[in-house]
Length: 89
Image 1 (cartoon, helix red, strand yellow):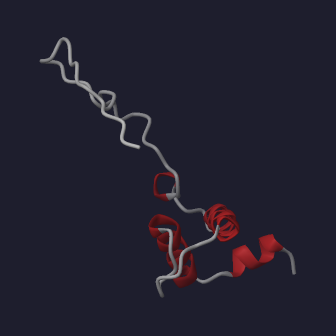
Image 2 (cartoon, rainbow, N blue to C red):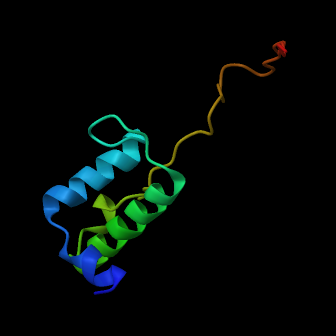
């Protein structure tokens, strides 16, 4: 059995647990995900979503390109926003 077969065979409950673990950066029992675990979970989630025809807007990492917003930190009322940045060592 290869990785794709395993990812396709995971239950909807495990899929949701993987998504939550990625979102929070930890397993339900509180243990942190390692970089390798994050990578494996993401791959499994993406394969599961593709194999189960999850709507594109519901897939992990979806960004609505039709939603137009201002870049972070812009304020149309301010013309010159200058502030001091203090670096602590």
